[in-house]
Image 1 (cartoon, rainbow, N blue to C red):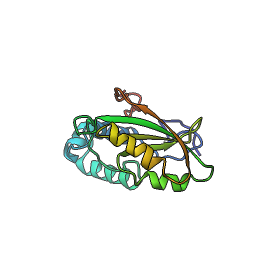
Image 2 (image 1 turned 120 degrees about the horizontal axis):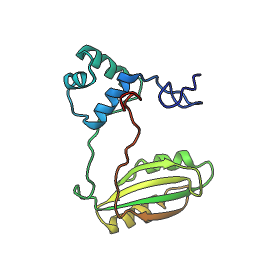
Image 3 (image 1 turned 30 degrees about the vertical axis):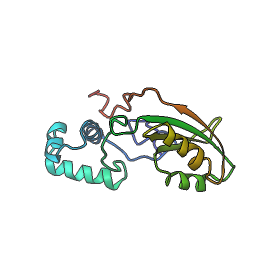
Image 4 (image 1 turned 60 degrees about the vertical axis):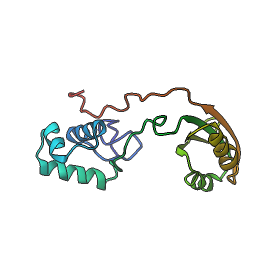
Length: 170
């Protein structure tokens, strides 16, 4: 396995699709505007439309691009209360707990983590009463959940994320 790092075939010890400079440019453009036409995408990355279609199809088939989504402003969409909920679970219950978390309304995202807690859950609700219901009556009722701790989100912003342009184009 290659150990070229983030700009090669993946991080050392991890398998990842090999992305060349054009693939990274396609990803960068789609992260900027996922609604652009393939024609516009091809023009922006300086390749033919046929090549853009082929690469886009390959990136989707390989699971590099998993979908196209809309970014919402949660507060403006009626979800004015956000919180991170740390969850401690019984050993070996993680599969069942994760399956249950997927089914709870207002759970936007969750991740298994290392450290003092086992799972970190992002919950977005219309108000504090709904947040209380989600945490105390839904998450804490999941078999295998031992405890939770909730942090209200006062403000949030996106970071710059990964830089998808080739090093010579960054």
